Image (cartoon, helix red, strand yellow):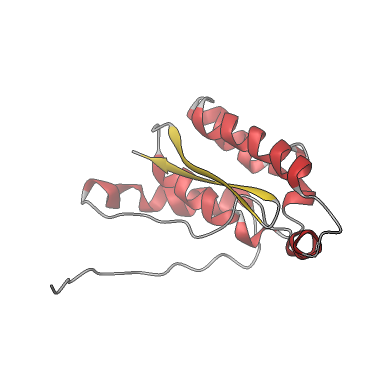
Length: 141
């Protein structure tokens, strides 16, 4: 079976500003009406140093990753779109935020997806444990 699936990769903006990435998603929102699938390839928890320590049995990331995951789930699946955007703009204030993401590169793809989601509520599609950390995946639309 052959497939002809166009793919466009969008890089993160160098300023790593959450608002900028939400705005990038908003600019992409009309593509959804054309049947374009928008995928954000990040991680809900990305503290590799902690995950590697956990792999060797010397640290457990469960508590901090659960705290951040609970906040993220609430923001993406329950909060109204305006509150969701405001909360993601100030994500660093979330419980265990900088423990979950010492650097934001693996969280910002979510901001793009949220911008493209418009008023759609998110649904948690996956919750798993990877190297001792809670990882979740969300879908909009």
